[in-house]
Image (tube, rainbow, N blue to C red; front, side, top):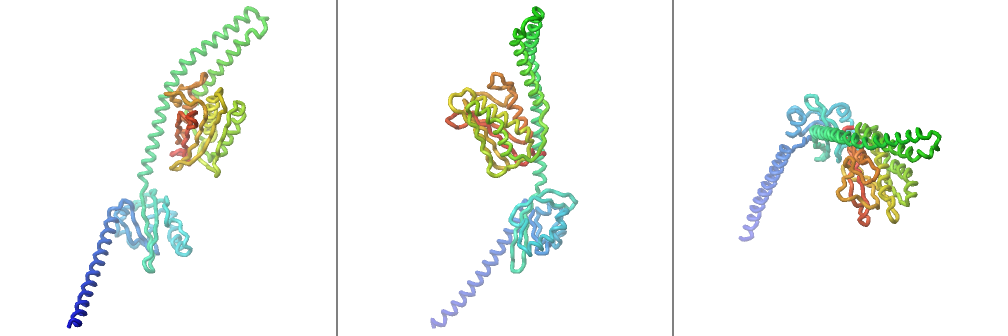
Length: 400
């Protein structure tokens, strides 16, 4: 009897178990479907799926907002309606080529392309495409991000940055003009006094040897040269920086700077070492103006090392930093910078005969390139020296 009952119980238990399993599987599918719908509905990026013929099979709410089409307007239509020329004409051929060769141009990577809204407006977007096979069917799903607003914000931020620099430059020019007017008074007075002294000597004794006025003539020349340098730097600072952009090889530019300054460094007993990148690094820049900045930094380092006991060293290195920029570092083993000195401030100088305009002009040139310059008062070598860091964008100024 027990033998008859047990199989019946087993069969009933199996039927119940299968029913529960089917119920659980159905419930799991419903949960997954609900989750998928929730993701599609709330995603901020457009999500669009197409079949192997390029026909749209899925178009989420964000896609409706970005492209301006309703879902019912696009389902079953070729995805090329969302593309401007030349993408529209090329897309079907691209799918056929990919299906034949399996060589992908968009699948598995992020591409920057243009989309087309329903109203005919073209807009920049970032596109990533994935592929999935369901039986014999192939589906391609694209996640699309509208970056038009981001681009507008970037342009506006750059416009405000440039405007801020222009206003700061105008304020600096005002301060610089006042300083020039003040500093011209003493040299002009000296020129007048020396010139009058030379004339008086000539009037007293026109036949006297020229040697009697040599020292005064030398003072005259030195003062005129100082005035010329001061006015030249004033003009450089006041007129701003107009760049002649070209592709510049960083290594080649630094080697030219090294070759120019090697003899002077050797004369002072200073080791000048320039480490150029092993692979060529090209950037969009004004080669002549960057050369001027690099010259200024090497010259300042040599001045700092002039008269320092023991062998001096200047080291220039190049390294990458994030966001498409490179960092060029100029470090020296000199005495470092005095406490509280802002070397980028107008007229701030540690040189007895300096104008205090060299580094502000360097910073102005670099700002025009979208670059930044900073200084560490100590280079990190036995807590000595100074190190200047220049962070340059590889692709030139943002608005170039």
